Image 1 (cartoon, rainbow over the protein chains, first blue to last red):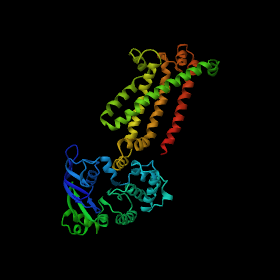
Image 2: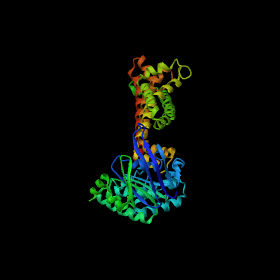
Image 3: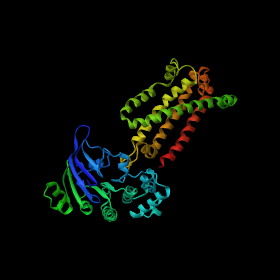
Image 4: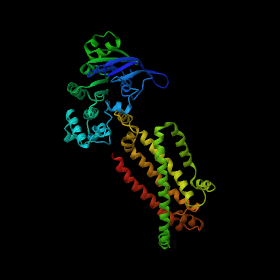
Length: 243
Length: 210
């Protein structure tokens, strides 16, 4: 199996037996970006958490680099996967520098290597280290925080990146700027990316393929152009909201 | 003779009883912290135990302090006459604010931050030490401060079980119907409580600035 991430008949139910994910199967090739589109509560976030094992499937299996997540040590697995969430989830008591250095420090990189890596990451997301390294998250704008969130996720150079509505809380102008920056970043870095959003514009801008989720089911997973032509009411609802 | 003359005449005893008083509070707080902090942390990991533990600590707080000292006297090993009984009672009193604030402080950490930490591959103990405890420190410290101030006050009753402390003057004053003698115990005790409150308050403020 040469897919980076694979779902095989995955179901996920919460305590009361309510199914959040119904029999989802798909495969992701190396270095592709899949955007999963869906309304709130469609199961997109749950799908992401099944990949980095914040959740374990009730039945079925999730494979990361050919190995079932159940066989991965969860800590190793997560350090192998960058994770960005809405509002970035930065640690408020850490400086920008320490936030970005999180995984490298957990992995006990030498001090000097961490420092140069942090600076490299800050440059990468367009934040001059001299200005931003020593700031605290509360001293940043929403867009800057989100850039730091991306830098933190990339710091240990993980081959896989999961993003959960990372730009959802930003104002439209900042969002569109940061989306374009992210697209450039995506081209330069070879990463397998799963990106969850309810913003169809974002999906078309960033996705090599687009998945559509509703009520815990993956209705479709198609290249962006085919998605536009998809004849499904939910897909049409999203595409129409775009025009 | 006014109060201050009484205190001056008995100055060596005032000093000695103040030291005893501080000793009672310090030892009790050390024990209460050693029990309360781990228990509060454990409750955040095992939510099932949080209700019974908080319930117990709550009930203990509702027992009038004099009665609690009285209850402890006949109990073997932990009771009897002397400092040990007083320390047990003070520990029981101080537990609630420490446990409660440790629990609520850690539980109050933004779930998104905790999730980000877990998602980045932090182990539970890394999350606790590097994220949850530092972020909860202000709230935890507020609990320690409350517990200390309460303990300084309750420790005056320790004299009733022969544990010494500034309560000695108060009980002596009550039996001699001598208000000055009561104040000779009450004033230093109030000063101690205020000093503890201000001192720990300053530390709390620094921690809260995070």
